[in-house]
Image (cartoon, rainbow, N blue to C red; front, side):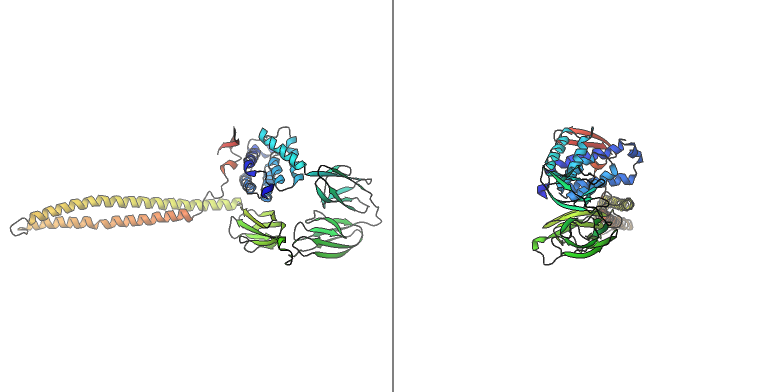
Length: 495
């Protein structure tokens, strides 16, 4: 994966800047339909969360995660500049066709908001990804035919160029009243492959069969012809008859069924795939998930995953990951499992959960400050009292010693009058009183220390109100100013 990344550590600031600028256009009224005043707070919050999560995933080399977050950000912002981010992410994940389509659309815009460096990067990425593509052109004499490539409907019509990544592809031509045509085509980079298809009229209506499985990227083979890989986007059309349907993927046991299709019939076939424990060891990898929230339910290919943090053994390749946690947005995304794959998944809180969390955390933090403040005041007061009382004890002690010296200075060494005895007792009682007051000072210091400790404990173990706060840079609905520096584009704002 690292080799596929285009020095993203140097490019991430571009992703950040452009996506911020794009989403900020909402706040600046670039589109009346999404003017700032009409954007709900929940949408603003989610847009910022998606941006941060997408950028973190991109910087970590998790292009599937970045794609999921940026696509959601694009849905929320509806701004073409986000195509810049999507073009780079698609390039990083090896989808050259999607990368080229996004960047071509971006660069074709008369005013796309890119600076010269970003334009240069977009053009160089477009050129590099275009070099990995070839094209196929399908011709047929049947009007109204539609085309499929690798099981996916394409918008091109017969006779138009279809841009494809270099390699082997399955091309299908479908037309009402004619037998479907399926051909395997090898496309070389930079070349145009022309395929001429003669359609055979049908005496009977086609049958349609929907084929599904629990895993992605399983090859669907019908009578030894590759029809595509799961998940197939639509049903397959066949001439009536008997068909042998096989599903294969490395690391899984092959599944096969025989079906009889009637004229005009429709049906569905589910072929669940099971891990082949006897497959080669290099057919398997390990996926470790570090999830930001505890008690999340993790599903891999629809099955619960036990202890995903310690690692789950899976066949290498693409898998569907779903994560559920009350109070948080669901995660639905694809993961690519290699020999050892570790992913950090940040769950994003929903508005109601976030509101309750922040309120509770702020209350705890307030009590922490109150307890700490009261404790600090009590410690200061108790310490001050002990210092003051220490002076009072010194005065009382000197007065007692002076009166004692006077009483013992006579011939008998003792007081020779009741007045003398009374003065000695008064000085002694005063000394005892001042010494006895120390306990109140120590008690106050002790209570203050306990309160201060409680405040510190509440602060340390309590929730952080800012835990889910998006970074300041992603406050795309604030007032932003663009600054051009020697090392790139930066943004500043008043929030």
